[in-house]
Image 1: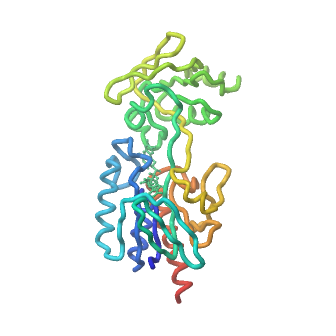
Image 2: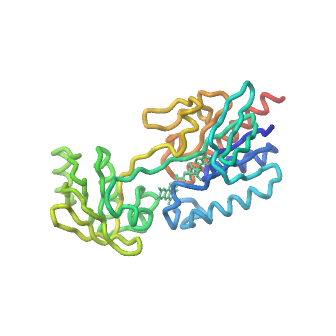
Image 3: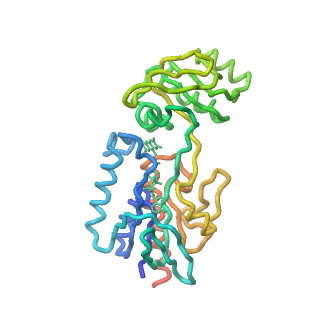
Length: 298
Ligand SMILES: Cc1cc2nc3c(=O)[nH]c(=O)nc-3n(C[C@H](O)[C@H](O)[C@H](O)COP(=O)(O)OP(=O)(O)OC[C@H]3O[C@@H](n4cnc5c(N)ncnc54)[C@H](O)[C@@H]3O)c2cc1C
């Protein structure tokens, strides 16, 4: 019987595994290896790791974990988890079955991008979703914000911090009030509400946005407001409660409403989506698991 399984080997699951391994716990980290930031070449904002390639971050983390003989990494998707009286049965894609006392879900989120032709050619290279992650690299450039929802105005204010040369495209939607339009005009931010036909450029570098009405604009990069959805349905099928925003509800140590099931990282949507926040949550939740295990065992 394992002490804990960690499902998802992003920064959260990796850091959680490290803390559990260092507490003498017998653990397995299952990871399908489809992280949210796989599209980007550089990850920013984590001190000592600023600008690191996400795959390199993961390689270093897994190498560090392999120093602990009580920690195993299995690169497979977990398909199902069954709650027994005092434990869990974990079913993975290969058909193999494992037993564990506790489960940490660190399965992350998926970005749902506006359905615009060409979007995937530039997302992660010159079009991004988070200015804290990639704003510095696009600082002072002619940027576009593609935003189709009500959160658009907040994003405009945020982006204006990095570049004043901003065009906002709503792709045919009307998301701004008259007051907001007046403010955009005052700040000389152009608003285009026509439907986008295609995004064009070369080798991941956005150049042109062409509209269905035949017009076009030139931009050197930008941001897009993406929707978010859970990368895995494991939490929901186990009956974990969700917040209105779609995140999994937990206490401050990651305990969900299902006894023995914990959640950490992006999955809980409790902190801004950042590698450092996910790693930090992984550590806190692992400590929650360790506290519960020692209390049960002492
Ligand atoms: C384009 C882009 C750029 C970004 N840039 C930055 C940046 O510069 N700096 C920054 O701090 N943050 C950045 N982020 C945010 C950052 O990627 C996330 O906050 C972080 O990856 C969340 O970590 P996590 O461990 O919660 O989830 P993830 O990193 O998404 O990891 C989840 C893991 O769980 C696995 N998994 C899911 N379901 C299962 C299953 N059933 N069985 C087994 N494994 C499973 C997935 O395959 C994945 O490997 C960026 C995000 C995007 C989209």
